[in-house]
Figure 1 (spheres, helix red, strand yellow):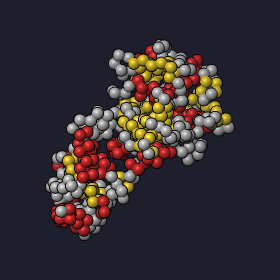
Figure 2 (cartoon, one colour; figure 1 turned 180 degrees about the vertical axis):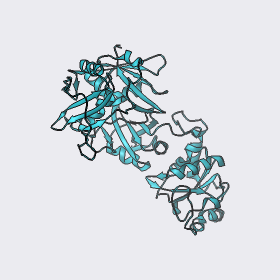
Figure 3 (cartoon, rainbow, N blue to C red; figure 1 turned 90 degrees about the vertical axis):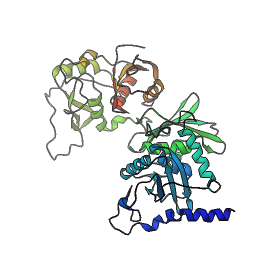
Figure 4 (cartoon, rainbow, N blue to C red; figure 1 turned 135 degrees about the vertical axis):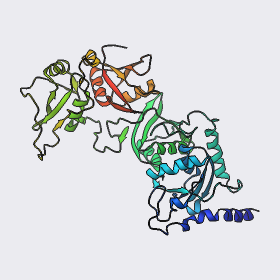
Length: 459
């Protein structure tokens, strides 16, 4: 009985699996998602809601293959050809399949960090026997339940084929009987794509982490495959959801946080970020709220000192009166008026070690427009910060976590009625200055950049 079905099964799909041998005769053949001489030319392959996926890594799971199609619509069937490292994926509509192929024309699809190839199949639908395909069908039924809305709403971005909401995952470890390190998380999640940043922390006596992928699709694949799985036998269960944050702000590379794109970051163990003199210009121009910085020059022989040119003398006087004596990076900042009227730019071709920078075209200038309301909101540094341009859906917990991970302690928080603005109180003025420098203009996604300024109010 089973042998007969197998032979029938093989004959039914022999043509599909033999598609491998039909392509590649033309050196100019086009591909759906990358150059591959064996792939069918697009003009010889009419669109179909069945897609042929090749060059899958060994031991790939059905869930990982299904995850490739979830952002584009409902997945209605799957056939795994594990001996050939191939699969067939059937989507609910031909339009969804076309969208998926078009997307992966520009973005190379990856499974476990391995590029795979996707093309239209000659089959218009998959007819599989559930007795031979039990595991795949069980996985498909579970995913279909999620797509139909019968599972909890935590499966955001899956229900209606909407794009994944964020490349950042929030991870909670339940039943943590053994320690879970940052390196363990990186090793597990990197199978699904490039892990860019990780921040670990403890909240409500639970070990948690924020993990940022380079692509939201990778985050969705990891969430679908790993949510509810155990890291170790019968313990350390992963609970995964999308974070409302779309970009993590990592200050230190140590055992609690890591930015894999910035190996030059300090460890935070007494190592001050002001050793990197290029940061001083960034912080000064991005974060001064008493004038529009035009140019910055860090002194060659005294790199803890700088000349800062503002738009006019009134702005310079205002900045000096508010910032002189404030602590930055653990040191008291001294601000005086300079005898120089302008900061000279280095001669063309002269290497000044990035000590001079021109910010005259910065989009962050706040006082360009005469009579701007920004002139009415100039206050001395305080422990309470005013936040504005907050993205819809971002809650108090998200913002508390964002500011805490910047190295401070959040003492109090209060949303304004419209929830697009808020007040957040740090434990000290120095912490407020530091978090303001780190998070002003922070990218919240959806063309929302967080605006941070000092407030005269208290919470």
